[in-house]
Structure formats: structure tokens, C-alpha cells
Image 1 (cartoon, rainbow, N blue to C red):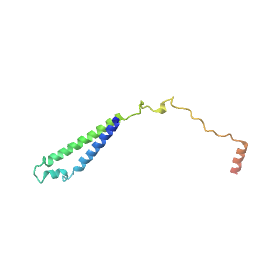
Image 2 (tube, rainbow, N blue to C red):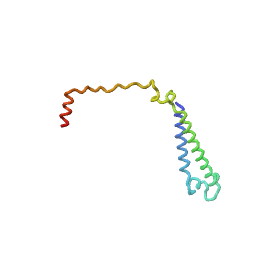
Image 3 (tube, rainbow, N blue to C red):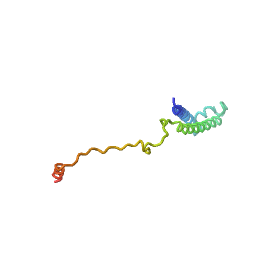
Length: 117
């Protein structure tokens, strides 16, 4: 298993977690954080603490996702080559033969002239 595959799996997991954390939040205060509040009682840290946790986890997961994407670019397998373009390599270019076209004869020229008239 290559390093890029590991990074790819981590990116998918972090992206899924980020989606879940964002969907749990409700901008009007009626999401999961309001059910922890329980009408003014302080259960499981209260509404304010849950909102802070969701906000911090969103930023942490977003930063982690960005870092994983940038690190995965370094881990991409370039096939054991140095990554230079083969178009710039003079040894790799070969001369392509010209297409084989038959020589034009007098009969061909007469046929072309007759079809034009």
C-alpha cells in the first residue's frame, strides 16, 4: 500500500467527519447544541460549551484536511522518473515517416481536369 493511498483514505475520513460536524451545527441555535442545553439547565457542558466544541472541531478538521491534501501531493508516485517532460528529451523523439503518397501520373491529371469541367 503506497503512501498516497494512505493519505487518500485519511482525506476521505476527515472529509466525512467535517461534513458530519458541519451538519450537526445549526446557525439559529436549534441543532444538536440546543438539545444539550435542556431549557436552561447545564447538562454536558451547556449550549455555549457545545457550540465552542463544534466550532473548534470544524476549524481543526478543515485545517487537517488542507494539510493532508498538501502532503498527498508530495506522496504522489511519479513512476520512478524525475518528472521531466518527455517532449523535451531529444533522445525520446523519433522521426515519423512521411505518409506514402503515389506520384501523380498524366492519367490522374486528366481525370482531375475532366471532373472540374
